[in-house]
Image (tube, rainbow, N blue to C red):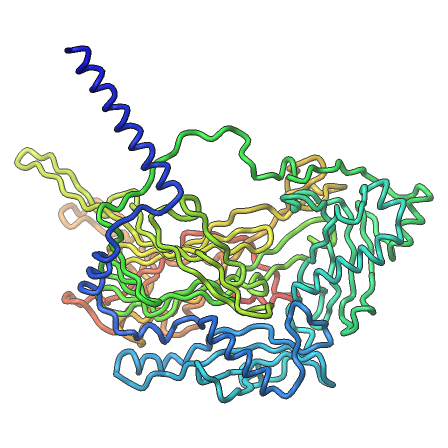
Length: 623
């Protein structure tokens, strides 16, 4: 009987273990279930939502289509979809939400004013006319447009010349087709014996900006092996293309670079190679999975790590484009160009931020090869929202996160939907919000408060880089932004004095020196729109001890300063900042102290581009 009981207990334990493992593996594939109807009822009961957040809502795919149809029918010129467009065509480059003026929105949100008209902002490339240009239109009202207004001169002070347009994706494709059909065949021996060229095994990527001066469209193209993780497989060949003509057949090679040597064109490279006057390095052919650049795990997977768990489901609510969490509420969006952003951020019902959004990200590179030497990336040109990708559950965000779709119309013929490209989740903050243990002769006590934060996240893949964008909301009223860079490095071919520009990461691959700078817009409305900046610092003052005049004390004193103008509040990069920068409201607390928020900067940046550089004005925000 005892043996039977032991056997039963053993079998029961095995069954329980199998059930637990089954639950774990099931949750590894899908989000754990909870009573969604109960959660919705709880959200309706405990969280206010009046629909005002919709003033910040992204355009829906239907609205994008309506704007496109309206422009096609009312611009009075022939239009071509961007994927099919030539430089000599007209095309609609992008359609995004046109944010109403802040004053109108605040009147609507705070004083029951008229709801601002919902409008779109459309960027149109006009290549098929005597004066090619880029024009911006406000189109409205949505969802059924009846008017469009050219705001280009009002916004920029004049017309936008056509050379300021971003390269379309199809332009890069056309350059690669030109290489394959026209340029590579001009150096058959070099291409075959040095690069093992077989038509499909090489890929060209543009280095930006395309030239030294405004108006230049002379782009260097870096050539890589066409394998997974090709960023780490440069072959040493680079071609500079003049793509300024609106006629693609007139695009031409200006310079050819290979392994530290410059040539006028591919024909000269071939002649010099056949004459034995080219320093060559035969690149080892990489496997299709990239070999050392592959992201496949090098070691077998270990057992599954810790998982997050929500005992009673999410403690946040999402309705339309508004999120409420504990004492927080905010509206969110995903703009095709600038990516994730939040509006009307309130803590305990009081607005502290009107807008918090990404404006641009720059990366300056150094190398001894021409393409990387001139690379000054401004990722806004690629589009943070357009580049937002589907998030992987359990890796990019927790299994229990809420996943939302993003939509964009940019360099495309129709609205594109990125499934699950936004996620929202609560997570433990890893350290207590506050805690104290007292062990005194007359008392002993412990008090603590666990902290968790709400995270609003998306990931933009900007070529080789994956930028992970987080907006973080703490329970003590602090709100933070952070960005993590992942993906691949921007590599260059290793030759000559390459070690002066980075570190060797493979036999013929240089990891290049570079900087990253992120530009955010932070529109704080602490206690209203009238605010000012205060700095708190410290100084040591030598005083005599009041109880012992023979001794002196270096006493720490608080030094306050009000920065009365924007010029005083504009600190330059690497300035000695005050220890405490405080964005103060035009009101005080019960003790007469200014109410407000401290601004903390935890990151650092490399040196800014010298102001004498002709491109510096384009990224002057980095000064």
